[in-house]
Length: 467
Image 1 (tube, rainbow, N blue to C red):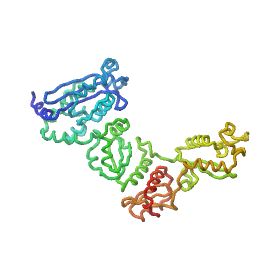
Image 2: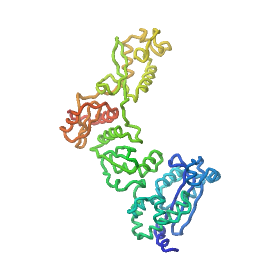
Image 3: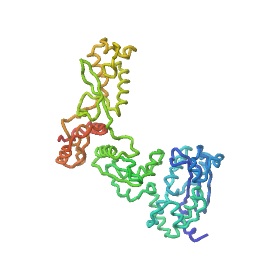
Image 4: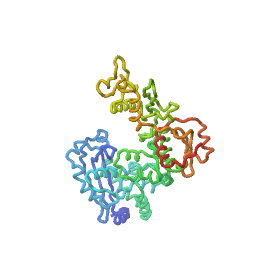
């Protein structure tokens, strides 16, 4: 036995380890499947290698066949993961799970084991992070870079057992160049933390405070990927990188994140308002909610010739936030018209009187002819009766008008959130600063502020300062 091998085995004698590599049909753990698995077990009994092709029960894309050399024909008669699950589970049981960019391999196995009903919660060690810790003077820590730098013997690159063998060789090199105590201390620190993406600097996580606030994930091109709010920034950010990644979106975000930024907030309300504002400003690719709401619209009821009619208005209307006769809040005009038509049919309201339809050459609306209108268009239903039914039916849709004569400051833990007409101006510390913000001019109605502040006002009516 070589001196290097002898030095690297004591750790494994006390803490059994498994070097794991997978080949897959793609990069999404919830959608793609495993095509090959390679495992090298190292423990008190020595070193054992095992590998198997896996039938993914799905076609392998052409470019992946070219990369790995694994074709659809090769896996056609291979066992499925379900058929291998018991053996793989037994080989990994009780061992530290070591892989390069471990979140990828761990995420795939976690999902595969979930499908077969197996529990899988190993301690995870990423060799990318291990290399960065032990060899901080080098910029690149890909498997190719590590193999070249440490002169590892490459047998079959991009095949599961071949890449697992590179990890085992790297482990031995580590013990050749570092004292066992130093290696053990570094490994202990890394496996006691959530498995962060390999390209994310752990120092960024260390700097995040445990306060209310908003966090921002950025990708390689500096563009924002995702914005979220938290009552505990550090804990919430870590949760993105310590879950089981059963959602492909969560896994995709974590794999793409290369930089994290954050903005502290005075409390939960401040974090909610800041999140809504930043999502609209930066339009991160993975945020669907809280997007720009310039197309938001509502129905305004107004009297004409003794009858209540409906007209569609957008948030650019100067009275939008203050009109007590607004109903709805719809994402766009098409949605608003479809909703009102369906609503009118449900309550036997007249399309013509509401303004949804013109009479043209008929004496009554089409709905009246098919018994879906009580006749407000041709005089069979009195206008007052129809008006009363419209108001009663649409009451649940009513948009709450801004309940103050002007701007207010909402007090939260020493901060003042300035809001006027369901628009958020910013957060300041003094009333003088609040007044200065209001003086910058009117802001557009914001549907997210309407919902966030509306709920907050119901719970905190005594924490409002008129400006």
